[in-house]
Image (spheres, rainbow, N blue to C red):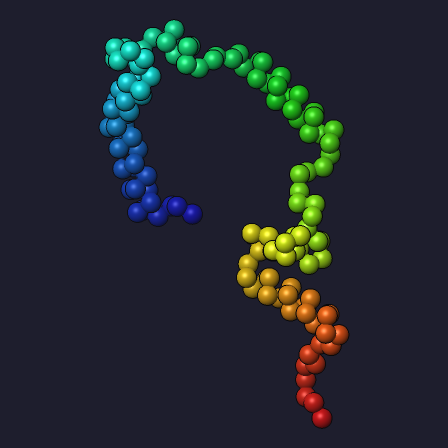
Length: 124
């Protein structure tokens, strides 16, 4: 999608706006990083605020975290949720479930409780 003339024009205008506002954004960022209100920001000032870590060290940490997750082999899921009814311990359905699905499951649950189901067709 997003191939219509209108979307192309909007994308073009957004790009021009970014170009126009880039110097202002840079100045605003430098001002926010300025410590004493000097208006000038040096790398030593930035290093006091943020720590610079080499990329190889970050990659090592990521690899270690992936290994730790692979060892567990199990995702953190809501273990207190009934797999058949999808209800948790408080009787609530998951947030992703629509009202229609919840109503359908409730109908099945109630029909099972009562012990009878509706019969479709012609009753003689």
